[in-house]
Image (cartoon, rainbow, N blue to C red; front, top):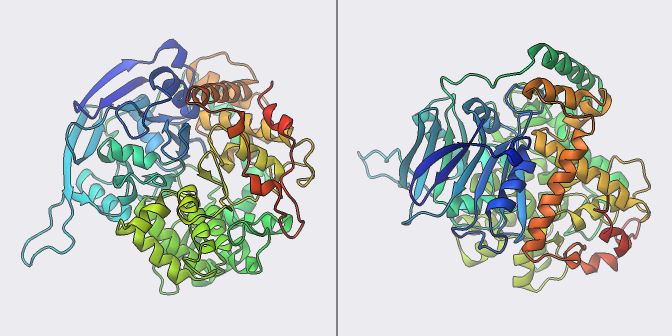
Length: 582
């Protein structure tokens, strides 16, 4: 496995062995190590000093269920600190076949423009792209290289037509081209749909600053990564697969997907409603996972409540949301989008939420950040609660690159500042996910203290066996969750892979790594990876100027009661400051 470096200023590729200090890291942990070693934390996130890093996790490459995720890292234009966003799909798998431990994209282009970077075993090839012609003159065919300004769906289709159906692609939409802080990086799912987004933190804007519209990973002619001890690997894989398939949550997520969280959050009073002003939504039944499944089964055709985002996944928690006309509206429709662009906006129609979701996806933006920004805009009177048509008009403002559109697509904090709104649900500049932290206080601790900003994937605690409204003990619960998730992100494992690892013997992760690489790591490897990753990330942020004052929820959440439990966020500051004391 090698480190591939691409300099977009010189448009060249160099390949080198991984340094010893990088050799046993992957995914989020490797991204953090590289950023701390090579990037000045005070740099301009959209300048030449920042680097964009693609790093498959340590278990990526053998279609182990839910364990082929890609981590993408850089300094965030949204938070000003370290950022890792991960996604399913096929990018990590193709990188592993190419033998890439990490792809480091450096510098900025010497001249304006956008390029497609094609990577294969032959090396790197840059192909310039041009602005798409929206209405070609009669008798004149559109330039097939015309990708600038196109949404991710049309862009992906054109790239697959050019490079073939077997490649993986990471690409940006207009949001990334415009360097908007809510821009993410889309990746193809197993069906070649650019639906798996490394969404959070504005890394799509970083990719746009590097002048890259897309990176094509073409592993044609490349073998699978070697396994040091195939027999031991198969035995460990068997234990993991059985544990994963036997876990009851596997079946729940297969049937209802992440939308199953709607009713769970409604029960806890943690479903963000009307810009985080309440924790329960009167229209929750209409946007629930149960209703989503019933709706899709009734529509049939292209609609499917069960879908795998990556090859080999046995959970299949994704879905294909089709309309009454039998055509796909969006795939997938996930809980975070339902929460932030549904209940958070007072919208109780899954069809309306799905159409909003498609537009945000096509723009290449984070539905969490944009949904939160729309909630703040609604509080400012820019749209009425429940007005999906107006929400679509505001998304069109983004597509047209109007001043209002740029305000919205630069995130919830940007929108709050522009309109003078205090109730902005964000930490370190990043919008909160769809778990209200006053009602799920352990997740509130994660939002406050994670180096990543307000991100549920950094340490969700809703399944912890604890009174979520009691401030005591929440820091301990968050600490455990943050360590484990940083470890899983370094393995390339989906959050739901944890169901299998939790049930299987404690040796399973170590057994897989030892068999894969010929190592001799211990059973504490998940926690070791997690702690090392968090240590690196916190040090980067410290050098970037972050202090304990940044590890706090918004002040209004500590005094404004959240219905129905009238809870405030009251975890003691000394508990927040002690989260990383281990």
